[in-house]
Image (tube, rainbow, N blue to C red):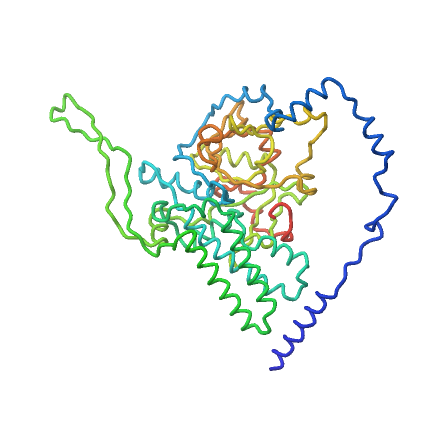
Length: 484
């Protein structure tokens, strides 16, 4: 009884403080005539901009066209020959549609080539909706547990503001894939196919976010730990209902068979005159659980894959962990060894030359020609159009929130000249209508400027780097721009 009373008094005190605590601005934050935009300043700005014929031509062009349509560098675009020294065979291009599931598509696209090769499959795609379902439910549970932990902080604290801003969003990282696949297994796409809501998540996420915020409110208002747990379970029930309605209920077991590629068969009776024909071969129909399917078809655990990041400004060759960057209450936060892009490319090269694709994460929003599927530094020449230097260093992009990793894909090819990789072939998850039938090219300069994370099998890591991965991590806050 004493413990419960103390809990209640503490909660009341914290709520009272959060209600009546005022914000105290710094003197420089207050309104001041000293900092006003004056008429003299406006006149000076006008005089700084001579309206030349060239300026008017650019102004007219911008009035009738999108900016990105006017900045494509033609020379760089036509210099991309789209040829590669080494290319890994892949299946058809996937499409995440209007959802933030690139990390999931890239993760499953990383796994499927080995399965296709091993079983000689014609085509294959894992069910993204199946993993998406469990990701959302696990993410809801994680957020509600964090809400319980953050009751001691005001509702408008930085941590709570971040929690309320993104209680159950789409984004993720490789550690999400590893956790979800290891716990829930995998199923083929036709067992749990996409729905309108799985591939267009905006409206579903809005509803889920409202349910989650109400759940956080209920937890904060709960007077006892028992009441907190009741609020959590009731919220999870609502989340589960929305997910089943929008995505379908994940199968506990399913029947499945697969079709292999054509197999040569000798049908000639006269051995001196052989005629080769082909027949399609079906596997027997079997019953699987998601866990048994994963075990039977994939076999090896995902722990052999190691994450590496390039985070300029943070200690090099140190392990960095990003707090809250997980989609479960009991899974591990995302962490990786901070290395150079040269070290990244050496491991990526070794992996691809051994027919192993490479998962990576980048800032995909910059320096790209969507029509031709090219990412290259300078392919979008904003400087020439506006006469302004828009460049930022990679370190300052992160520090000043001008750029961060926002999209995950898979490297499936490399072009080598004079023993060095000069460009990479990319399997994207934006469908076949963007890029070159869904495939893209990234150049070495773009890799160095915009690739932030790669994932490789540890057998392609040098012993020196592998030894460094065992360090105690440096922990970044939940709002760190690299992972937020």
